[in-house]
Length: 258
Image 1 (tube, one colour):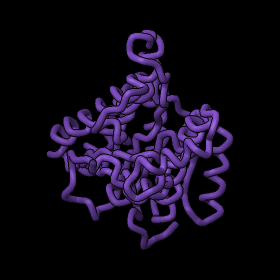
Image 2 (tube, rainbow, N blue to C red):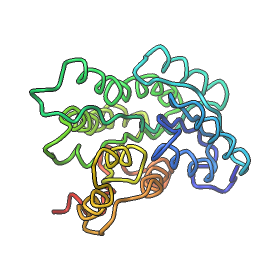
Image 3 (cartoon, rainbow, N blue to C red):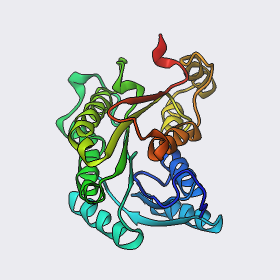
């Protein structure tokens, strides 16, 4: 553990931490001194990440967690507290992209499944970590929304709706829990090179052209990397951001500046 790191002495729970953005967040938080609870439904890469962090001198453990299961969320929050102490950083990263259909073709089951993970998952994790933070009178909750929690696009309607919900949930909780010293902020990534984006491109016949088109959506000329988001999470999780709550950190290569 880095005793002089930016989040030394803090306990972080990261959801959806086995791959992509969540993995980058967990690695960076651990490198900067936090004890990290890595949670996901993908067990093998999650355990591998714990091994990688521990071999580097960091502190981490893995819990299998479906964030749409409230009982599992409650039990995991208690287990993390028992192992590491009270959770002081919650990174609500777990999410799915859902179906890419126009609204009139989306089924109720497809809508509910996405909302269960992307919205209820954020609600459950926040709900069951908050008592630990309230008792300590401090904490930072970081909700991963999206550029599509700020602007629209003509695709994946349930996903866009879910990310808009996360943005407003963030502001509401920021106002409710500010008296307890708890800060709540959202991060809004542009397209980031993750397994989710790779999967999106793999469905296209010309993947090279698809990647070039994705790059061109961003004024900086390329999609982002998971570490670009992880550094934002590190900042919001650290005491460096002690006067920031209820706001959006947009990390999008200029996508929403148009």
